[in-house]
Length: 191
Image 1 (tube, rainbow, N blue to C red):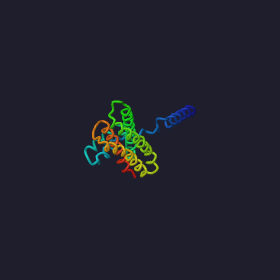
Image 2 (image 1 turned 90 degrees about the vertical axis):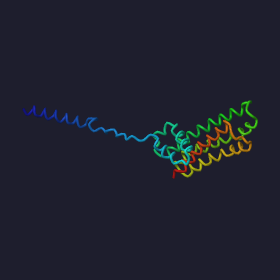
Image 3 (image 1 turned 180 degrees about the horizontal axis):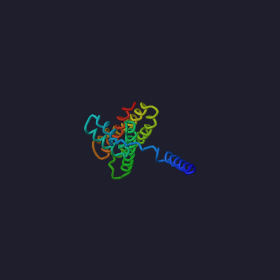
């Protein structure tokens, strides 16, 4: 009888051992996912814009990036805006370069394009500094954004000097400037 009792105790101890040491017994329960409002940071930042046109542009642009649904703060919005700004400026630069080589392009517009095209790589270069500078020294990121904006001023001056007040090239340039201005505005909120 003692032998059966010892076996029963042994089996009970073993079962308890395996139960309490089972990976599922004490496994960390997955953290409860707290749903966050998608685009919350986008909405909060963009709703502070002064005009409805600025708000609409801000929301449309930032929401176009896949990371904007999970952006938590203005620094993450700035990274998104920089990425989108670089993409827009690059496509605008390519568009201008192709148009400047097209023999059907008006000679005055070709002069403007030749003056504008170098502004774009300069602006893109400044935007590329922003992520690292934001991590090291946030005011420097604001300076980078302002320099990216300033790099496009000679293009504005060229359009004005040649009295080109409308058209698809100027429209694209204005949109590119709006992307850079969005970077400036976000960078100014980061301390």
